[in-house]
Amino acid sequence: MTSRRSFIQIIPLAGALALVARSAVAGAPNVDEKDPQAAALGYVADATKANKAKFPKYAAGQVCGNCQLYQGKATDPAGPCAIFAGKQVSSKGWCSAYTKKA
Ligand code: SF4
Image (cartoon, rainbow, N blue to C red):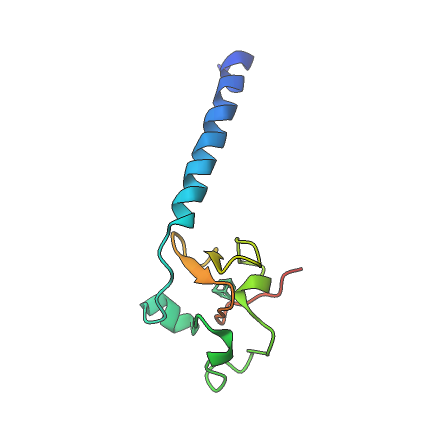
């Protein structure tokens, strides 16, 4: 059984692990547009270069920075995305999984 004391000892450890995970992502490589998963989703580092013929749902103004799945700050040049684990996407990028941030 977990005592209150051991539970309290776990909290700082969990916080430290979260920080390590976050800094690991900060140094993560950028998604390569030619990566098979990226290519399948039509990911481009520059949203204005989205393939509008193949992905007609793209609309001007849609960028990773204002996508629900983007986990960085909109002002950061790049940040993690829920779709591409362990990698970073350009905040000015786009892919067909784009979902407007609520
Ligand atoms: Fe960018 Fe959103 Fe696609 Fe991730 S899901 S690559 S944040 S548009």
